[in-house]
Image 1: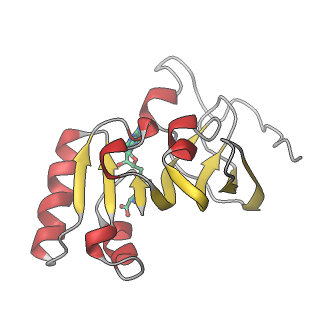
Image 2: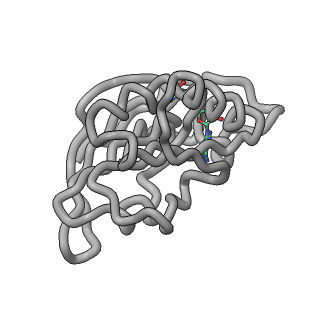
Length: 150
Ligand SMILES: C[S@@+](CC[C@H](N)C(=O)[O-])C[C@H]1O[C@@H](n2cnc3c(N)ncnc32)[C@H](O)[C@@H]1O
């Protein structure tokens, strides 16, 4: 399993109970946050694979994954994440518009032919991924935005 957005490490620790800690990889973009989470996970005796970097690129070294979960919001499911997921595996991420809060939890199942399909399964709100966050001059939420459902 791959988690994007380690944060405190709390959800990583919870996820260790499902695939097992040896199969848990988590990636955090902020080096200071990643170091804190790494220390916390170690103190709690979870030996997850914790990486620092842009999780929107996935983590090919440990791919392919059965499950990928982003705990930060993205404009769309990043292609590297679906490409690093096994056929039949799932990618789950909060997707939203160009403005801050993400508005729909998308869960897609990856196919054999470089495709993925799924639906919106919930309405959480997560901070936007670092590289996709609004600039400092932009106040949010600017206005409500509609989610496209297919
Ligand atoms: C809502 S918090 C995650 C909460 C976390 N799962 C927990 O249990 O504490 C979102 C995290 O995503 C990180 N983040 C933002 N953009 C990222 C990116 N492109 N790659 C990896 N992590 C990112 C943020 O620095 C932040 O720590």
